[in-house]
Structures are given as structure tokens and as C-alpha cells.
Length: 426
Image 1: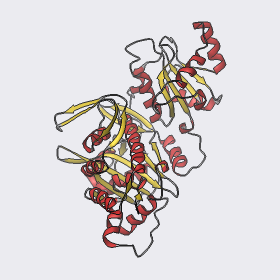
Image 2: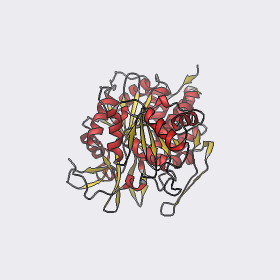
Image 3: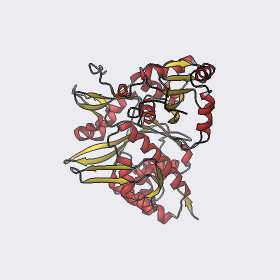
Image 4: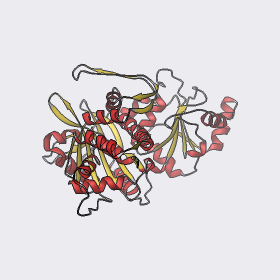
């Protein structure tokens, strides 16, 4: 009888199930049951640069009865170490292994993290090749070259089936963008992998080959029995059980070094809402459509996507980003579709930019007077009839709380402004 393998192998890519299934097929049934539900596992993906091993990817995973929740933590996160120094989180593995990484993340988020899994990405390459590659649509060409690491990335835009090597390059690519843009690509990758694996029907022998492949690149403090119980639970879940979020904060350059500064209030609220499903009003409750209406041809290049990345890093949910109906807006608007003033003010505080907050009726009236047409109606028609990112489909205005139109008074450089002094760390 053929066996369907779905989310279990997604996590096995990061080795959460690899050890367990391997042990199962080698040793047989476990003699005792272990309860891992509602516990946290820190997943670290390693790379190597100039002889040092660093955490290239940091994921906090919480296993629940009907879901697997994955919180992406930027590797550039600025944290205070136990010796009082302030550095990036990705240096922790080199200094103190997975145990130090676990302690720092645990202290930051206020949750106990008993387990860790460390993955070498060479196993990642082999596993993607074993499943016949990963079908994925790449929105824009990805090109990058690093002579120090002998790394060349050249992935064209469009639909393609990525090999293991290509998949790893897509996963790791950062380029000139912030780590937040890379995290968003990684979460898109996970969803694509979930769909791919849900389509596969594998024999026990094929499953054994897959997990042996992943097992070669795994370090974990899970015992074989504990890991087996975990894998058995994961195999009952489908790809839709995967839920993702990003630690809220802002990218900043401090004394020439690029850091990610966590927003402690939003981070605490995210833990309550995302992991424990407790009602807390946060930026995650706000859905935004971001439209580029900037009249300056140079300043508006990629502006909607940059602002969307910034807002998503603050926890806002992006329903769509695209161009407005015209690129001739002298001023920026925030159209409050929901009528919820708190949601509108949350976005205003996040951007710290001049925004004219208006109701849909006020915006329609003002554009009729200024441009001779109700532009809100036109915007709605364009969004509904166009495959717009990030979901690559038509979007209705009713899917958002706010519509942000970026006009000539919006300065793109404010997104990467340097604070006068680094914020105090707890």
C-alpha cells in the first residue's frame, strides 16, 4: 500500500522527521510514547564562511494538534549576549553551539525551547533532487556573484522546476536586499514544497531513501523515540497545516553594520497571538494594499515592494502591492476601508511618513475634483483583474483594511534611516 507523505517531509528537509523515520525503519516500533505537542523546536540551518560555521537560517517551530507553526527569525537580529556584548544572533552557534542559540531566542521571546535541530544544507540539496526538483515561480531574475565563497546565482524569472543546487541558491539568496525579503522568499518556498510533497505517493522503500538522505546532515538533542513520535504526528497533517510568521522589527544600519532590531511590544503580542491564539490587537490584524503612485521615475522604482517588505517586517499583512491607476499622485494617501481608526494609526506610526488618512468616500470625492474621475473605483477594477503579488492573483478591495498610495511626498530613504543612537537592549 502506497503512503502519502506531506508536511512530515517538509520538516524532514530541516531534519525534524528524518532521524525518527530512519530509526523506525531500522529498529521497529518504540517501547514508550513521548508527548511533544505544544513544545518548541529551534531549527538552525548552517553555512560555512572563511572556516566558520554560522546559522544562515533560524526557525522557531511549535507543534500543535492540527498545525505546525513556523516563526522565521532574521539572522541579523541584534541581541545582547551573556557576556554583555551586543552582536548578531547568527554568531551564537560559533560561540556556544545550538544550546547558546536556544537560550538567546528563549530569553528574547519568553518561551522555553527544549529542543534543537541543526541542518547542513548539503542534505537539503540531495533531498530536493530525490523528490524530482521543486516547481516554483520566480517573480524576477535572481543574479548574484560572490568570489570569496565561489558562489554564482543566476535564476531567470518565471515558472521552473528547481534542482537541489538551484533550490538552495534560491533559499539562501540575499543580494542587495534585507534579510526580511529573503525570509519572505523562504516562506514562499516552504508553501511550494508543501504542495509538491502533498502530491507525492511514496512506498516505504522510497520514504526510507528520503529520510536516509536527510539524516546524513542532522544534529539534534531529540532522542530516537522522541523524534519518531514527532514524525508520526507530522505525517497526519496536510500542507495547509503549515502556518508561518516573521519576527516583527526593522532593518537598521548601526556603525556601518546592518542589523535587525526587534520590536519588543509587537514581538510579545505575536507570541500571544500566533502561538497561543490569544486575542491581542497587533499589526498582524491589519491587512494592507500598497500602491505605487510616486511621480518621480527614479524614486518610485520598486517602491511598493520595498514598503510592503518594511510593513510585513512590522507584522502587517500585505494583501497586495502594485502600481496605482496612475503614477501622478503629489501626496500620499491612506484610505481607511475598514473605518477602524486604530488600524490606520498603527500604520501611520510604523511608517513615520506624511500620510493623508481619508475614508473611501473622501478619497473618491478628492480624486474626482483633482483628476476628474473616481480613482478608487478604477483601482478596484485594476486589482480585481490583474494577477498582483504577493499571491499572484486578482484581489478585491474588501480583502484589505487599508489602501496605502505612495505619492510624491513619500521619501523612500526613510525606510532605511539610521537612528541617532542604537536603542537600549534589555
